[in-house]
Image (cartoon, rainbow, N blue to C red; front, side, top):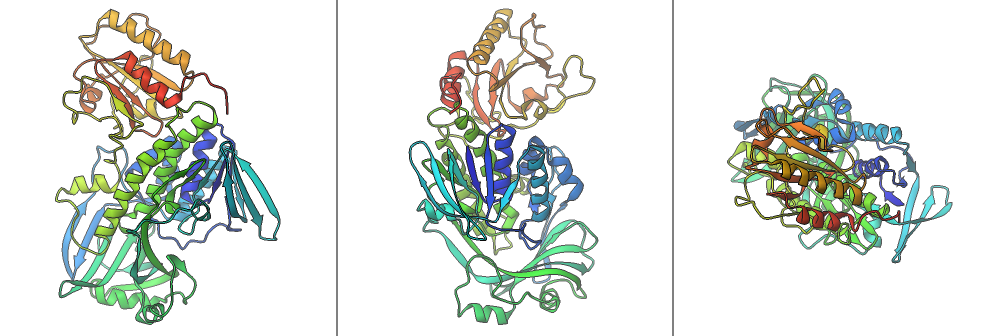
Length: 547
């Protein structure tokens, strides 16, 4: 059904999302062996942790990684910022996990679903017509293979063959930073507090001429360290063209090279030791003008490149795949409305552009991007990312204050303290909304009549008949709401009124939560016709056969 090219975090996420939904997928990668431990991605954002909870990965990731406490910025030896990332109201904090561990966890999860990576298969060409994609692959020994699929997704990184074959290129704002950088995994002896991302910067006459970024890893004094490449490398690079990403054109930097940076930028007496690996890399940035061409898509670094500031690249790619996976599955199974696949680009390209712009803006500055530290953190963790105003989401009349509660397109927040008959512990909303289907929450309060309840039951029955197994429906009951008659709907109780507060429910209303955790539709009061119109736009006419 789907050929996924590239088995990094983005491709693995997409393969898992398709496998969860029973979609036949081939995941191929040109590398004959798994990548080594030299990679830039470390931070797993709060939003990505929510996604991993849904995918069944959160506990293993927590057991393997470390939590980041905050960020400290030091300029010319003086601390200019210390931001604490202590927000216990969020489902998850910011996790530190090397990319090779991320990929190992994703591979293990895919394996439990019956999937695997086909390594050593290189893509050469892609063609398509109205019904199929044809891809030509080869193995390392020269054997050729032709693959026919309904869809192809390029998750094949900065040098994407899929992007090339689709005729896509990075936009006019793309570029490369002139500096080369060196990266390493090493131990550091110093008195800096543990668990903080550290940015040491040196400014001369207002110009940045030195920077050292240290990201903590599991283990005492262990860090992923990035700083500008040694002068001898910079001088040689000025005479040659160095592409983005890691390069093998230069000898790996030595511990002495990193000690020079520590002596200049870190606190006096700092000593580096136990260099595990090191490399030289170049940073680029850019975004393609289209994420979809017919039956072909691009995601992750194949669609957008980011400076590493804030660790946005990997997390944004994972969210691309999480957004696209459920939509492709509906299309393959004959349940996608006419515009559903177009909504991938409409939603994810603006998100990729915003993330890239911010990363470029803050890459080489000590300035905070937002005076409100918590607001900046939520933005950086992509918890405030919204698809408001895009064609794939909507809302009906009755929302006189649109900023009250999550609007259509916003991330649906978790809620604690829900109760359910026969369950001896409080429940979270995420326990209901996670999974492969949409979730419809119909809220009732003291103003709800028995006639209303019968109407909701009728609406729910019509939805479940037309879109079987695609929408899970719950009645959310306020403590003061009349006890419902024996309606054929599962009931959860908003005992502490936390749902009412989080969703700004000022009367009976309904929220449709998509499989990617964003609000697809909301209506107040519960307008059955408007809700059903939206569902037809998402799923088509319903009860269609597999494509």
